[in-house]
Image (cartoon, rainbow over all chains, first blue to last red; front, side):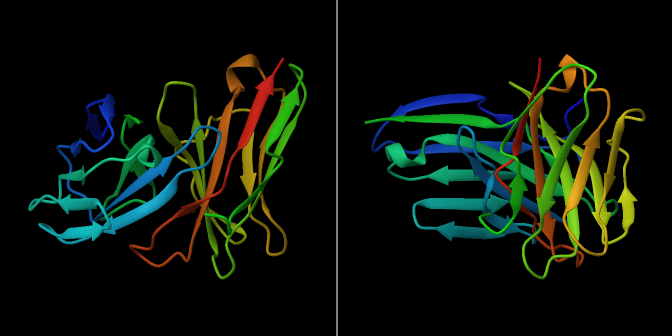
Length: 111
Length: 114
């Protein structure tokens, strides 16, 4: 069973549209990271959120950590073809060492 | 993630051979994670190491797989007697090690067993 579930699994949108990707769990995390991975490459860290309710913005990307630190969302405004990629959330628990990765959302932005 | 160096980028091995994957962490990072990514699957944790110590190997298969992070040199993930099911992308990530520290990934090694 997957600790972190992402939705949607696949998303194909037109350039200029907005979108939201969700990362949900029944577990509490001390921190949550969002990564973007392109084909043939490693995941690239976008942001880390650590406080319940925290909102971070990175240009057109807005990340939110749920109040209970069990879920997170990534909102992209005015998507561009360069946003195309696999978006992964990863959570770290208070105990234990590993980062638990979500199932991933594959985003395609059509010019 | 350019700071984490993995080599080789691509590795082809015949069934029964050994595969050695190397990972040099970012400067100043003393902790290394190894993850495996199978086609159409997510990243699965394998092992977490500190210099000269294995901290958590709960995700490592009990047989044929081993990992080390010596005092000097890169971390090594070793797979003995490879089988077709070992074909995957193997990623290494490094962190400074402090609680809550972020992990930065390398570009991965794509292992193909023929």
